[in-house]
Amino acid sequence: MRRPLVVGNWKMNTGRDDAVALAKAIARETGRGSVEVAVCPPYPWIVSVAESVDRATLRIGAQDCSANDDGAFTGDVSAAMLEPWCDLVLIGHSERRSVHGETDEMIRDKLRVAIAHGLDPVLCVGERAEDRAAGNASSFVTDQLDAALSELSASAFASLTIAYEPVWAIGTGATATTEDASEMAAVIRAWLRRRAPGHADTIRILYGGSVSDGSAAGLMAITEVDGLLVGGASLDVAVFSRIIAAASGRAA
Image 1 (cartoon, rainbow, N blue to C red):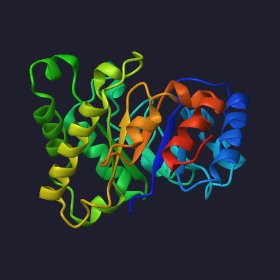
Image 2 (spheres, helix red, strand yellow):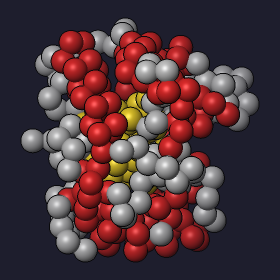
Image 3 (cartoon, rainbow, N blue to C red):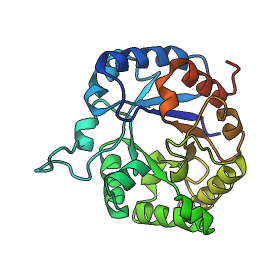
Image 4 (cartoon, helix red, strand yellow):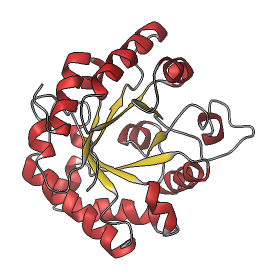
């Protein structure tokens, strides 16, 4: 059985003291259920947050990493630099793809570097509104999976998590219907069974896209959804705690 995973992506929010206090408060909520919880602070606060909590209780993630190990790459942070402080890393978030112009090839290379340095990658995939309107949501997402994972060795799939995040739902307040989310999670699971049959039933699939405490339980009721990638709602301890409770099947 796949253990539920809830990841809080803080994006470019919080000050240092706020980040530490928020992480400590979330950590107090994680020991009461079966769900695994991680937070992804901004780069400057990762060390402070990692040192302030028990990482056996609250996992620490990065929001991105470089495709390069070192060198003249101004502004980049390598997986090797993150390795002592982080357990996982988001790869290919829609905001990295759209705002920073990350290509499928860049995402493929980042994923391989992350795995090489012992970070568990959370690969983000998802269609745009125009792709869904044209009936191409499934093919768009499977193309993203092909581009990122086609050269991955079978053993490397063991540490992988996939987050389905429809681009049109990121930061908009719109959430995919349970039918849409269920359909796309099934598409991803079917792709995994074709490409990595040895790991297809153990890899977790998350839903991300304006997740709230009101939508969490319905999303977690979907058979192939094993957790949630949470944005703004992860900055509010009370709201995030209710999302964690929904993911673990507990009543808040």
